[in-house]
Length: 107
Picture 1: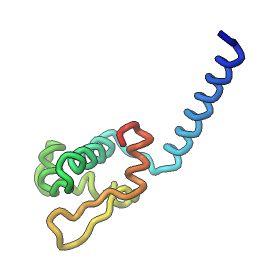
Picture 2 (picture 1 turned 120 degrees about the vertical axis):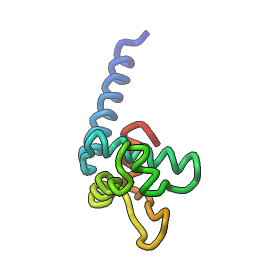
Picture 3 (picture 1 turned 60 degrees about the horizontal axis):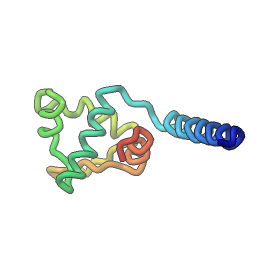
């Protein structure tokens, strides 16, 4: 085994991890529960090919029905969600959300 080659691999991995951490830091931070909600929205979409309703989000997060906004609004303000008024399933993940999920190892 070539020790120099092993060192280069370690350095390369470390550089990639640093870059990944910098990208993750450049996106708005999430609380643990906001991250849980974002992951739920992503997984729900992957399984059903549409996004959950506010009621479904509240049920999953163990909240009262009208309390889903506790997580949805901060995610929208941070640029992770878009909402279309007047639609029942009006939540869409943004490109920023997909990048955050990818950096979290989800997407």
